[in-house]
Image (cartoon, rainbow, N blue to C red; front, side, top):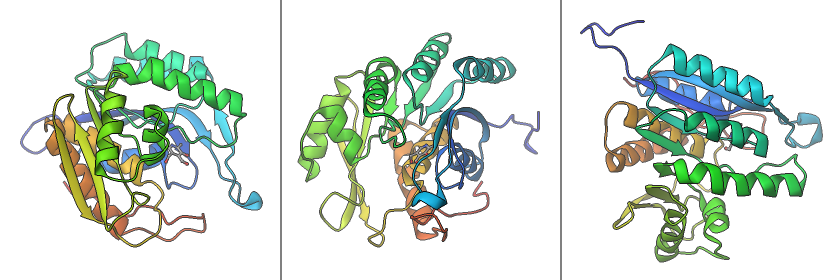
Amino acid sequence: MHRDTDGAAPHISYVIAGSEATGGAGLQVDLRTFQQLGVYGVGTITCIVSFDPKADWAHRFVPVAPQVIADQIEAATSAHDLDVVKIGMLGTPETIAVVANALSAQTWRHIVVDPVLICKGQEPGAALDTDNGLRTEILPLATVVTPNLFEARTLAGMETIENADDLKEAARRIADLGPRYVVVKGGMDLPGDDAVDIVYDGSEFTELRSPKIGDQRVAGAGCTFAAAITAELARGTDVLDAVRVAKEFTRAGITASIATRAPQPSIGLAGSLS
Ligand code: PXL
């Protein structure tokens, strides 16, 4: 394996997530983020999302066969000593079962879960089963979970989240599902001028704020944020500092977002920051 000039082996981050064919979200964003933060990335594909430009960019979703996911995880974990992993989009109850089973086969220093619940292109019944599977099989394994406002409302069973106190209540309820740290992202849709995030470690809350950038959603921001936390944790950073770095990294990426013919601009920031 390549070594830095000082002879140290590079830190490795692992991600189990979906491919998003425009490059604006999913595994493509995760691996770019790892690279930009100076970490060697290893990825396992769970599903393939190809937005359809002929149908108003509707989701087309194809799951990877469970055995192929298991084979990828076997290859990745056999080739490398992996101890920090990000879980992105899983997409089906079968995928959730195979990933939960594979995760429990070894110990992990950190499992960062981006609880992707929005999955268009599936029957409502299957989508609900998937969301329930994520809640019961994956969330309890998480050391860090990063719900956005929609995901926080759904996982916490709250009708509305409108301010920092609501974010804290959601974090408390989601912590009851098992994750050690909950990072609830207020994002664009929380009223106010700031992007507010709450970090809850099971006893204390930390509120992070930075001014919102523009008024447009940017594809890939959630993936980037969770991937940056994962990369920092792989480098040995503690959770709160990893979240701070990830917030700043994501803010810089949104500022440098790139135009695309898909409906939302994509998070930018080409090149390595290491
Ligand atoms: O941003 C959520 C997300 C994650 N992973 C994949 C996606 C999307 C949204 O489109 O396609 C593969």
